[in-house]
Length: 314
Figure 1 (spheres, rainbow, N blue to C red):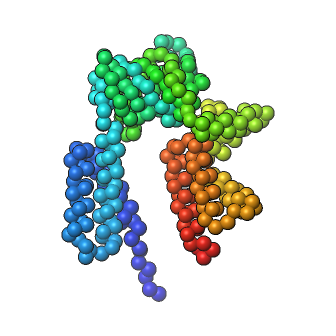
Figure 2: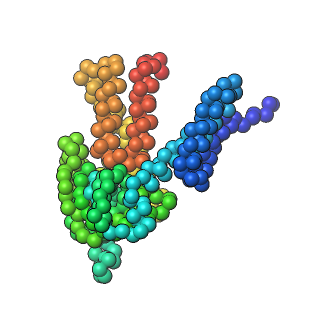
Figure 3: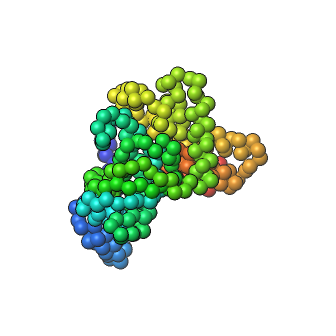
């Protein structure tokens, strides 16, 4: 009986990609980006006769390094990270990029209180008479008063003290808020529609038990705002916390139902693919463009396009 050899053709590209991403932060960001671009040009011009697998490995290594380098450059762009190292007191105007997370813990002023953690995409920052337009991700931490009515997509203004963010977080800085936020503008109509649907789902399960009220929206669209703390801890301890994060299964169910409805309505051919893509985009807005949602949406879109191009054969 012939001994079967282990096929490492997929392991090598994966290792190359992760190696490039891991090594990139160890080099000065700008230098790393220049090196990655220069190496890509050398590979394209010099090694045209190299095997396909070798070229894929080199390209993925360079791609991983370049992507992380670009991310680091983005976080360091503008004055936010510099002002954070100086612990400046600033006023930030930005867009809420995730639903506020509340937790009952000791407040900054002493005593127990509701605390909030919410991510902003800072668009304007002012300190000591200096104003700057930026696009920097910032995590706001502070007392929960005034944040209960703030939703994903709102533009708010908040003041506080900047602090450096850990390198393990994709953030330019932490902002320790000193007061409640001021609402500058509401989100666009599609985001308001998505929020209305999320609110409608929470309303639909209000007659259920406490655990069901929190768990069902989390399972369907990743809305964990009504999850009881004890249930959240139980899911985490049992290794089932991933069920409350939107995955490919959610996208498959939603898109599958939409395509069945479209076929029943007489939609055929490439129009079905477009229906599926529109539903995917809408589901991303509904479930929020978090990493797990975007990953599932990208994979679902690739599958839709592949099936649409290949037709019944695929």
